[in-house]
Length: 466
Ligand SMILES: *Cc1c(COP(=O)(O)O)cnc(C)c1O
Image 1 (cartoon, rainbow, N blue to C red):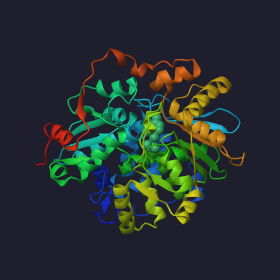
Image 2: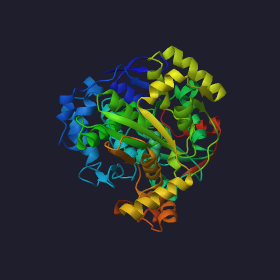
Image 3: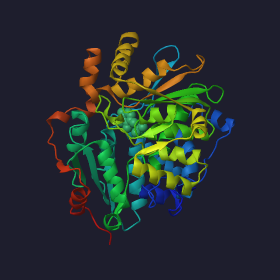
């Protein structure tokens, strides 16, 4: 499989190169040259497969010659062997037609582990024969950071520099990053928002005088391999609920549009997805974009679902690329204008095309707390604030009642103990795998939200090329 940039002028790469690269040099995001697809029979044949076998089938077309099937199977076995549930991503029925897909059984208790555990192994595998050192630079609204750090801590040939917005991640989230003391792990608290941190990471990639000195790589969902690994659980869940005979809808708590874009790809590959519900909190740029065509950046309001406190959703560009009939040159103009004005109006014709698959909902603090309470009182389920936003959107949706709706449960409730306790009166306890978190030493630096300051700090510690 070959990969092209959404802005049409970066080199075409294979899977191995795209995994190591992150953002394209023209500022775009890499996508496969075409969407692979499965026939109904091929999807029907996934019934009863284990998570690992489903993963091998779904991902192999994207990987092509970069890894043979057995090597891919070995990596998946290793990555998903670290999950503490035999089904890796178990489905749980919570009322007549609503289901939760629990994606938080990995080492850091959020869905980011599903992709990042594999990505860490892919990095190691692809770097082993090379004489290069990778410098991962990332921004996190909470969960990517800990999942990425867990996936690469202590690995040779990789350094990770992770930026998080100071004071805007939960204590558990921060400690899961800052208590990892491996020498290749560097945590930076930025005096600013997640969007400030993410914009700085993008600027570092685009800034040749900086990026030319290191082999920079990304672990944010701009990295294609991450999205690829997330396509798997859409197939796994839908097949268990009767696909390809039966249509299935998904409700996805959304921030950077990565997780829900993976659902879009699953649909392009032939999975009968009836609807993708894009559930946002009050940071609702995606809801405004999909419902009214208004993709304009507001200011970020901190909420109890911090991993969704995002205004600019990087992966939305990947959807826009398809909506622009994959005309990268045209999209590059549109994106440059957006980067200047912070405003894009999506023409009605494009919006209508998106509406064939996507709907959206904006859930405020009351809706979120109400969903946590209702799930607990009616179904005895303790859910986290992000999952609650997805579930509330699923409950509000006007889909045909014969269609099952799967809400992606993106984080373990214990990651957000205070918010869960406020809503339900129950304080979820930390699973054994992270107990002791509050007794460990933390290490991080606090820096101003200033590109030069952050670049200099990283440059003093990263391994240069050659
Ligand atoms: C990252 C994250 C999200 C948002 O996912 P995107 O891929 O950025 O849309 C939602 N919930 C949790 C718990 C997360 O960690």
